[in-house]
Each structure stands twice: as C-alpha cells, then as structure tokens.
Image (cartoon, rainbow, N blue to C red; front, side, top):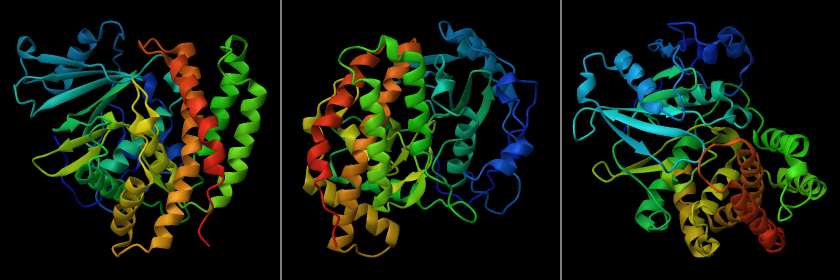
Length: 385
C-alpha cells in the first residue's frame, strides 16, 4: 500500500533490535550509530523495532521459507489460504508476494537477496536507508529482516515501463518525488558521495577476481582504469550538489498509484548520498530499458529540459531560470557517463556470481559501448557561464 506523507520520525540503527540471534543482523548497532554519517536522525519518539528472524530462505525453493516468515508476521492468516505471486523483473534479488485477499491490500513482499550480492550492496546501509525514506513518507513499511533478505509492505500501483516514464504527466511526478528525496539531509555536514568509493570497489573486484575471464568485447582492465580516473577528475569539478539519492531509478523501481495521483520509488539497495546529477542522469539512461536496451529512447533535449524545470521548481519552490536549467542539463548528461560505467562494472560482477537468468555480460558490453559512443559529445558540453 502506498505510504502517505507523514511527520519525520527517527531512523537510528538502534531501532533494528534483534528478536532472535541472526547472523545477517549481528552488526554492532552502537558502532554503526557512531560511525555512520549517512543516516539522518530527526528528533522525535522512538519507533517500533524491526524484527530480525533467524530464518534462511532457499533461493531455489522460496515458498517454504516465505511461509515460515508469514507465520511470524501474519499469525492470524490460515496457511492454506495464503496466496503467492512471483515477480520476475528483478535482476539482483528474488521477490515473492504473499497475501490472502484478492485486492492485495494486506500483502507481504518477501525479498531474497541474490547470491554474492553482498559484494555489490551494503545490506546494513540498505536497512538504514529504508528506515530513513520511510520516515519521510517515501517508502513502505519494513516488516522484518531475515538471514538472507527482508519483508516489507506491498505498494499499491503499477510498476512503470520505458513507454510510461516519457509521458509528461508521469515524468513530472517522478521529478517531484526525486526532488523530495533529494531534500533529505544529514545532521551537520553532508557525507562524501558514494560514487567513487563504490566504483573503485567494483573495479578492484573486476581487476582482481574477474579480468582473466573477461570477454574480448569488454575493454581491457588498463583502459577501464584510465577511464575511471578520467571520470573522477572531470566530474568532480562540476560542483554537483551531494544529496540523498536513490541511485537505481530504473522504470520498474517506480510505482504509479493512479488513485492517489503520485509515484513512489522502491528498492533502496544502492541508495545513499551521491551527486544530484548522477541520480538524474542515471534515471535518464533508464529510459532505454533493461531487458531490451534501446538508447534511441534516451530523452531528447527538450524532454530533459522540461523534466529538469519540474525538478528545480519543486526543489526551490520558485521558477527556475534558464541558466539554472542549462547548468543542470550539462551536469546530468556528463554524470550519465558515470552511470554507464558504474552499471557496466556491476554487470561484470553479476555475470561472474549471479544465479539470476539474465545475460549480464551482454548488458555490460551494451553499457560500455554506449559510454564510449557518447563520451565525445558529452565531454564537449559546456557549463553555462
């Protein structure tokens, strides 16, 4: 069910107290509370704890483990009445919906982490981000975590496709929701953007663990290293603000509720503080789709300018000047390069370890090819004076 906006409540990791011993949740909360600069904690009364169950769900046979979790979360449901629906769009995790009523008004989503995805995703950080976004009315309820996944509330609505997100009435809602999320701030100074740390970590994995088996269609490790250095040098100079970002806003991560006239974003595995222009540029790249990638669908300049006007006006509360829009346009298209590079590295790692039925190597090659194709024209974009 979609979550109505609500007053902020705390998102301290202290609220993730364990009900049972659970290896997945055995981090030191006190240490995390002190060390983490990426979780905003507004004042207010404590929230209820998020249970963590010592249950591991078999990736190849999800149903038995999912039903064990349902017995804990919905003890009043009769097991023989529980219906299930498998969602197959995801390429990182496996997702199962459990419900009793036909309208799915009370529906528990059971998400099982993909094999080896801890190489790509900080799961502790994901839980904090989930709590943070929930505190601002931007995420569903988080019901529990378990050894290799989490359970959360089903959002009513339709997951969008590439054909939807280019419709003006919908991309306006997407721009407004992104602007809202980008206004979530940490106490004190903003943390550093996660982009360079994550890309360096992904590149190191590719270099150390995967490079001997790389396809001939993938650039050599030496080339990748040079490009990564070039990206960091050039993009770091653009002065894009560091804000709280979703960082993975592909179409299926956008839920449109036509009854309420709004969109909400789901899946916060990669969320965190990052460059504003990266989050927008990454979303623009997703106009091309995932399963059948077509960069002819990348938004034209006029569509981008209108999208960016909606975004800036929502963020500022006043009209955006042409210079502001043009400046953001240049930043966004330059950071879209980093998005190609990031997800290409990600796909190489997934190709090595994932058990999801998806051609990750082909996807990596597509993203690298698009990176090198658009780099000259994007590099030539000048920032407005």
